[in-house]
Amino acid sequence: MFKSVRFVLAAVAAGLFFLSAPVSASEVILTVDGKIGSSRPVDMSIEDLEALEPKTIVTKTPWHEGDTTFEGVLFADLIDHLGATGETLSVAALNNYYSEIPVEDLRRFGVILAYKQDGAYMPVSDKGPLFVVYPFDEHPELQNEVYYARSAWQVRSITVE
Ligand SMILES: Nc1nc2c(c(=O)[nH]1)N[C@H]1C(S)=C(S)[C@@H](COP(=O)(O)O)O[C@H]1N2
Ligand SMILES: [Mo]
View (tube, rainbow, N blue to C red):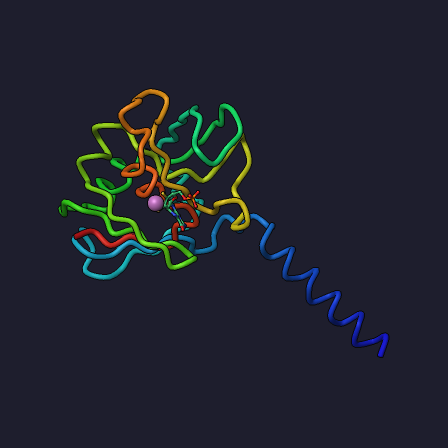
């Protein structure tokens, strides 16, 4: 009886830990396929993303209190790095949310794929490990439902179309 209660508590604790723990640097967190240089899907880790030049956006968002600092890779650099030739990104999140992002947005606004928020890696429980961040404050025309819907968090995979 007590044993099984302890077991349940341990399982719950392990589950909470999993949800709040940052991913390890070499774990695959992003898979990119479609119109890219490689004929096979490309798996990437935080380490792979951090090998690209980091870019920071400080902005308010509908989902955060006050100014938030996001650090990640310039999305345009990432898809250049992968030899992407398509016009649209189909972005899939861990919660099965999908968003379509025109490639044109990436350069025009300097969209980032963020892996850190206020200096810390983002856990899955707080929109991590990857979050599409538009510079909402810098471009007020982004402050509407069109761009909020493109702002996928818990990003897991991208298909270049
Ligand atoms: N991973 C993920 N990202 C997401 C969503 C979602 O359900 N899952 N909802 C999108 C939509 S449609 C909008 S308008 C904004 C705002 O979502 P919220 O109103 O739930 O905060 O987040 C976007 N990003
Ligand atoms: Mo939405």
